[in-house]
Image 1 (cartoon, one colour):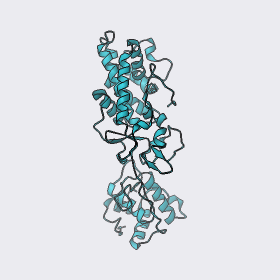
Image 2 (image 1 turned 180 degrees about the vertical axis):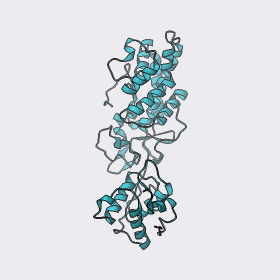
Image 3 (image 1 turned 135 degrees about the vertical axis):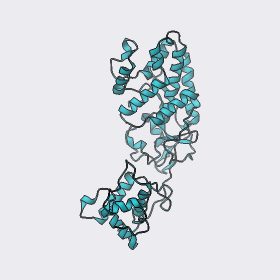
Image 4 (image 1 turned 90 degrees about the horizontal axis):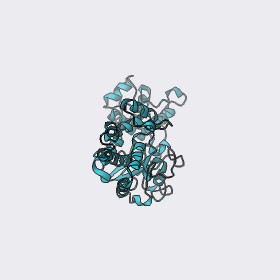
Amino acid sequence: MSLQSTILSGSSRLELAASGGSSIKAAPPADDLDAVRRIQRALVALGIPLPLSFPDGSSAEPDGRFGNETAHAVITFQKRVFPVTPSEWDGRVGRKTLEKMDALLSKGTAPLPLPVVPPAIQFICGPDVTEQIAIVWTQIQNDFRSWTSTQKMRACNTILLPFKRPDDPFDSGIPTNLEELKLKIQQYSDIDGWDTLPLFQGASKWLRSPPVFDRKTSGPCATPSSTKPDADDFDAAHEDPNTCSNTVQVAGQCWLNGTVNYGTFGVMVRLCSDFASTDWTLKFNPTIRAIYSLTWAKTLIRAYKKFGQNPEGAVLPIAWTEATFNNGPRGVPSVSGNRPKCRCSCGCKGDVATWDYIWKPNKSGGRPTR
């Protein structure tokens, strides 16, 4: 079929789907950007609001991301136009769905009266914590330098030989087979030995509570907040990319607080690396030098992100680790924040939280377990 409506016509990808070719569906993988935007505009024109896909309002350009919101909107449309055919409620935009959309748009009618479109959601990042993290990370440096060599080694082993099993390989000395060690870390990695507490996901409730976010006013910061506000701190909903929940500003960029936390790791790894290169009992041990290093730290991050409880990419955590390893407590990545939709217009500062850090076994603190 040839599409006739103003919104849908003119897209080769939509014409292909309308002719019986592959349907357009939720990513991944992402489909043709222009085709998805046309579908989003068509849905809104047919009375189905998409507030997250139109962050600047329904009259502006949609984001072109075929995510959960768009898929659910497609299903809503399909239920209206195929009320007795549940097999058509698949959230995919293929020949039959496009045929119904195009016909209704060409006639200038919608399946139901257009609802009142709610005001555009304000995507605002959480508080600016630039100064607070620099202060805490500088304190980590000062504390480490005051520890004995034994305390320093124990702290470094905690973060660079992290295992969740009783037979930790360093109980009987540092292993020399690094490849075998990598495999064990992939299976038993444990990163509970370090954290900047307000950046730790288990201590993130302050970013979903007043004065940062107040449910009564839906603001002023870290908004929109989590879609599951009363869920456990570790619930994945708190890090939904369609919200600004659990976000903080650093040097004008908006980040998930947990991503910034890897700057803590970079500061600590640098201290261990310098310790290994200057302590006379360690600097001639090539295995220690290899483990107390940025290269090894990045290996740990990749292993944890691949096999941990919440698998995700390692690129941005590594970027933060490298930034502070190379540039100290005020180092920031050269890449953009991972919540670019969230504007850095929040008036709150990080000083509304109590800042401290953990580096076991020398400095511990009560907190939830990951």
